[in-house]
Image (cartoon, rainbow, N blue to C red; front, side):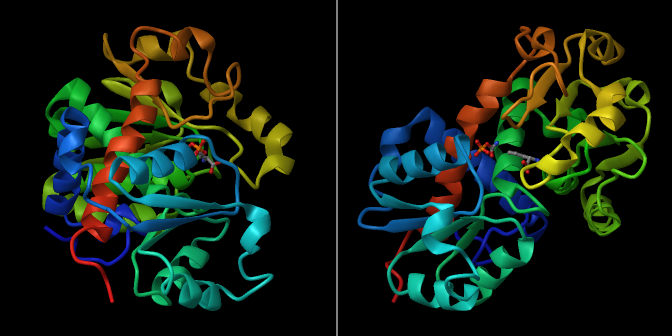
Length: 312
Ligand code: CP
Ligand code: NVA
């Protein structure tokens, strides 16, 4: 099977069947890693980073090794996207050298430009708009703990940011339920909510945005949060902390959710800010399972986008 798009720029680009197929393959890769040990033999992934990373770098690099290929880490200072060289020129160089490109950028348009200007697949590894690889790992995790994704009633508490956008798209692809609870002025982009709402009509997903965390958590069987200030927003840290304080995921908020509701976080976590230690380290926390699943889901994406025949 190949995906209908050359690139993974947003979960919105996947069909519901493709979304499920990636998760199915990720489950197979997790259960039987040896089976795909040569799937990307002699293939190379270029990893462009404009921002720091622990999970994304380590899981992509490990994924390529486990699939028989190789990854090259390109630090922010190496390429200086659009500064040392134009983004189209970076893409036109790399397509002649490597079999796939992974990019973590400030501006989503940089990922789009890389994709448009290269014949090899480009994978969005976090932009200001979305974080599709994270959502795939999140939904592999949710399926492991809840079995049927349609039974997932997720509450995302916090900033309507890149992670929130990808969760909206992912929920819409699999027919689950998502309530976003965010402060006024920090809602997800209307364009994302509108696109996800259209997708939701196909799958029966339910999407809602509220401004009261307790209202959002009520009836949820999974609670998710992310940092209040994303990478690139460091100057807003203090101002955002004041706005977001009532949106902390703590024991009191978890009590509003269903008994046994699991806790998710894309990590890194700012403990004591958006989440307390008591929640992050509780038995219902699946944050490290999510982090591990970045590896399995990205192996599936790499196999589907860059596997098979060697490109000209
Ligand atoms: N969740 C995530 O993308 O982690 P990193 O920023 O460490 O890659
Ligand atoms: N919203 C966060 C996610 C980090 C994985 C950020 O963009 O920094």
